[in-house]
Image 1 (tube, rainbow, N blue to C red):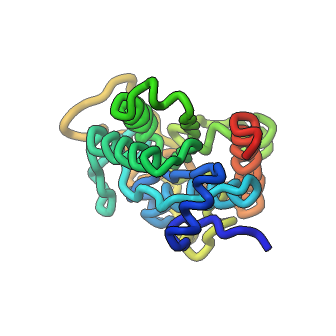
Image 2: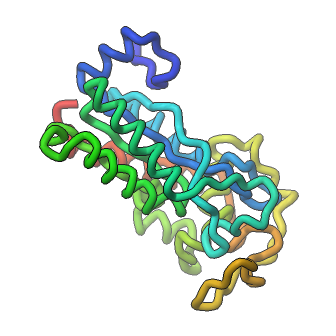
Length: 258
């Protein structure tokens, strides 16, 4: 019988035992952000959580409760703050949350931590949070601590992208609420996707500068930066398998005795 993987569902003695025995702890990093008219606001947390669960089952890990709020959505990568439904927190706040979680895990003897990010704008605030945690713990005291930072889209193999996008991959920035995320959600949570509501008013073509406070007019009205055409659950499974395998390979390499 396989061990449970959701940290929040364990009683404390079991969580303490698993951490003491070296279980890698996965921290999903997400957002509450518009994903077009066809997909749920929680997509950026659903995906990294599901990927972390799949990987944790294979490496004896535990998946922590994820962070459901992300760093400010930007027009060129998430549509920006103009869309109803998106709830933003500042980069500083996000970094401090990451810092505090890592510090408290370290206090409880956790030494193997993997952040799995699903929101593009979280990248640099996550890095800052990790650095702040190392500062707070003390670099000398943290010598036995290893933190792995993963953006799930970086795990997707070039060969898979070529299968999904035979006419060319538009890049992760424009893939917000588009084929990658929609396909993975169709594979994982099809009840949270309604392709009949998809509006094909993209792809976006942005000017090479930003303008504040008014968002650029180039953001498609649907909130989808590329297109949803071609999305399929089968493609989603290809993508999820790459993400799962990539993280498992990283964890096995970095934590060989785990």
